[in-house]
Image 1 (spheres, rainbow, N blue to C red):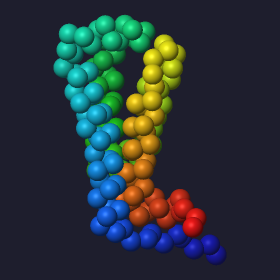
Image 2: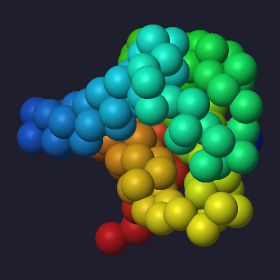
Image 3: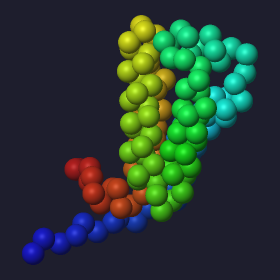
Length: 131
């Protein structure tokens, strides 16, 4: 019978590095989601440049904040990372389609998963790095 992978303990250094790495995308995505809900003056022009109607801002803002909240809750953080990967993948595709730089979205995705990997023993047990 196969045995379940055992989580490895988290050192304080690894835990805090993971928390800091995770904080960056959380702050950026929370700010972005709130701006979509607040609808500042330049939002309509930004959506028009990306080829989307500004009427999508409310739904995208709620989606972005919901995915970020699911990521922040420790019990659901892996599901949140999966949801944020989908959201950021769509953002990346949108920027590629219009010819804008897309590195920011990719970096946020790397920080989402990298921070979670460092602070979540269950994920490290599931995806072990070989020495």
